[in-house]
Length: 129
View 1 (spheres, rainbow, N blue to C red):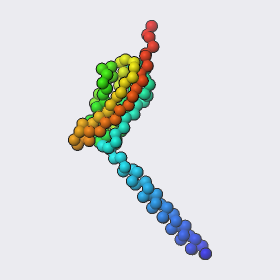
View 2: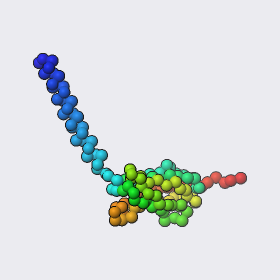
View 3: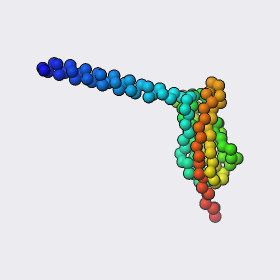
View 4: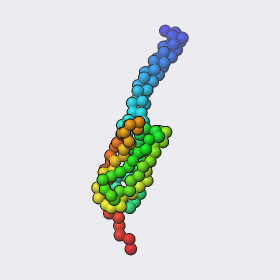
């Protein structure tokens, strides 16, 4: 083989490898567009009573409202609008210690009716002197 043939084979292999990578990456990036498979994350799942945590709902449909709630009256929930990336974040706290299940939901209809839950283990705050 001469240098020209080797160079052509190398360029062909590089081009085929690049096309293969493109085919693999493209479906993964569009597998879960905003508005499907919403997730809920937190800055901590073991906060102290009264301490602030940031809840982040991802994969919500952009422009839709996400409601953060719990069946406990000791959770300060709220409602936030999802940004253009489908993310809604809420800074909140728990007034009492114990186990809490927090739910993030969107309304049904054009916003998809998505929901996600997260369990928190809130510890008792130290006494103040």
